[in-house]
Image (cartoon, rainbow, N blue to C red; front, side, top):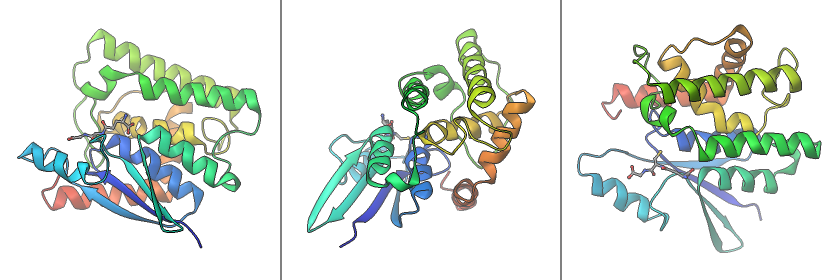
Length: 222
Ligand SMILES: N[C@@H](CCC(=O)N[C@@H](CS)C(=O)NCC(=O)O)C(=O)O
């Protein structure tokens, strides 16, 4: 019996955390159902109540895996990405070499636990192009660190058509939302990074996410 996956996400135009496991699931090739919960609902409690139906942590994304009559609930974007990598080894969502894998994990963890200023001052708005806001020093430093780390990975681990660690990996899933933020706010990037961002946007999964985000904007949901 094959496992049945349901990914519970927030409003796609805004939910940067949801985009990460979505990209990982798409890269795994496993079919999955999607449930989208409207974020920032006027009555904020209704968003929270909806999420609590799926996870006691009260946050999206959540992955539910139904198999052999049991439902396994995985919450937190990085935990979901790791689980998908475990369950789908053929998708090779981490680099093969242990030290390269350790570096890809460091990139992913740095994103997961940091860059709070980028997250709050350049919030994801996938379908829109907005003016570049005046950035404070902290945000500018974080943007510079992200760009510097991408340049390093792309220069040392990638070929001209590659992703951060050559083959598409969880590191790309973790930074996918930042790729969107940089485009939305017109953040200046060096050519090697701009080309990487173009490759990310060309992924069918990113195009599908763009379509869903635009549909939300058209429907007045985002
Ligand atoms: N560490 C969590 C954070 C997830 C998170 O903060 N999700 C936001 C939406 S993107 C959320 O659920 N907010 C609840 C709300 O708006 O009520 C993860 O990586 O999954």
